[in-house]
Length: 234
Image (spheres, helix red, strand yellow):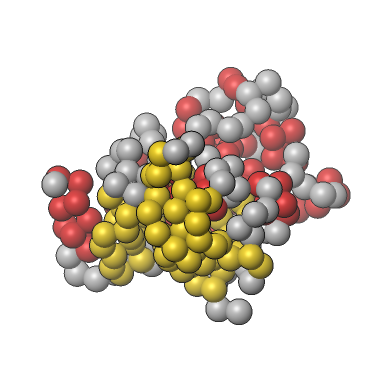
């Protein structure tokens, strides 16, 4: 199996309104892909469709060799997917520890995995008891990504996690994701508007406009940043 995630002619939307039109893409094992484009082009709708929060009008979704087209979100997550939504999805009233440990099947694993998280996000070393809602905006985003990584997912799906963050936090998130790929070979599908971040973390980029994929390229190619920026300026 060389493909972590595959979409074949997927269309979806809200009620009678079609937002995505015949989307086909593949994310290889140990590959990171960034989907970029302006606001309102269907990017977040795509992730909600993959994760089973929105029903598909047509097409199929395959994850780690399984046809998950009709699966519920909890079942997709159990297959080995870490999903960080664009909306803040931490549990603000719970502690940092509770947020990090909620998805673990066995709490005996927490200590070893938390040690790994501290290498990426040392800010949490003495803050396990702190209420998550009292963290700064950047710290909450780091907690959201840390909660995803602590599960050792096979596939990570991220929806604009850099939005509204200061450059130092964005750099920390990029370093964490690059490290995780090198360590675990995790596949990633990332929705982003921060072009430097996306090009640093991803191997390939896809451009979405009005529910369709209109351009693609390799992030390491000369002129990749200019090619992506052109679509934001049109």
